[in-house]
Amino acid sequence: KKQLKLKTMSTTSASVPPPPATMPKPKSIPLVPIPTSCFDENHLPSVLHQPNPMTPEAERQARRRTCRFIEEAGGQRCLRLPRVAIATATVFFHRFYAKHAFQEHDRFEVAMACLLLAGKTEESPKKLDLVIRECWKLRRKAQQQQNKLVSSGGDSPNVGGMSPNNIMSSPSSSTGGDLQMKPDEFKRLKERVLLLERVILHTIGFELSIDHPFKFLIDCAQGLSKKRLLEYNPTKKAKLVGKDGQPLGKQQQNNQLVQELAQNAISFANDSLHTSLCLQFGAQQIAMACVYLSGTHAGIGPIAGKTWLDLLEGIGVEELTSISVQILELVQSNRRGVDSGQFRAIRKDLDAMMMSNR
Image 1 (cartoon, rainbow, N blue to C red):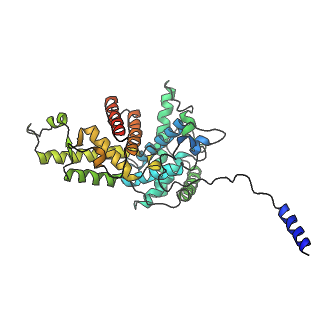
Image 2 (tube, rainbow, N blue to C red; image 1 turned 90 degrees about the vertical axis):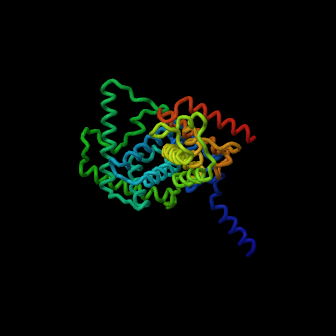
Image 3 (cartoon, rainbow, N blue to C red; image 1 turned 180 degrees about the vertical axis):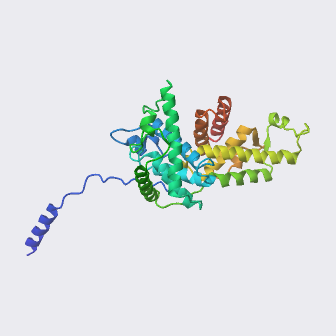
């Protein structure tokens, strides 16, 4: 009986197929920032997608263009969402395409779903019909402007080996010239956006609480100002005069310093949303880098005996350098905010900090 039992067991085990040599690794959900050492643009889904992979440059440009679309669609001219809701929609968008490829889902429809979901998350909900109509109008106007540019002899630039039409167009979008959508087309788009909203929720693991840099940078600017740890450099200080032409007093200088520091930092934080920094670093680290860039840009620096790294909490020189360089590259590519001279000066300062901390 023992022999028969052993024989039966061996026969049964032989009929079971052996496990595969290598089990496929599940895709990770980016609920928290991915460490810089692990983040690699060359391994993003859109870059690895087959049979038509995007280059890292094309993937980066697709993110930036769609983030500008989200910002404009959520702004005062369209949906009038609060700034925090637009920022949340942008983070949802980045996290979604950290797991999915641009070739799989139309990025403008994903942007609509992100705006719809972010409005609910930040307690400023907008009706689905309104979101679709405003985003549709904005997109159609942009397509019309692009068609006029091409028809007038202008060239649409190729980005990373991929034309804007390949990056921007949707198989479901019509080629008509009007800004009105046909009822059946509107119905299909409405269904797709609702479906994408659910896909986004599953992709981000229902993690709807998003930290943004804005609160951290305001607290940092006000804290440094109260402790009198920052001051204008001599060149900038000499130019500080009141309406009467007289030099500003210390209190007036301090009030202007914190206001200028916070405003510039918020601008840099808004720029950071157009990059993948929210996938690489925490909101507080991004905020500290924005405060540094703001101060350096405005001629504000630490008092004697202190360095920026002494004043900025929760960030090291490597993180500060990486965040600052990525933001400055974006700003410089947009040809606004920071000129080449300022870019070189800030980069030189970052290199000096790197050397001194080795």
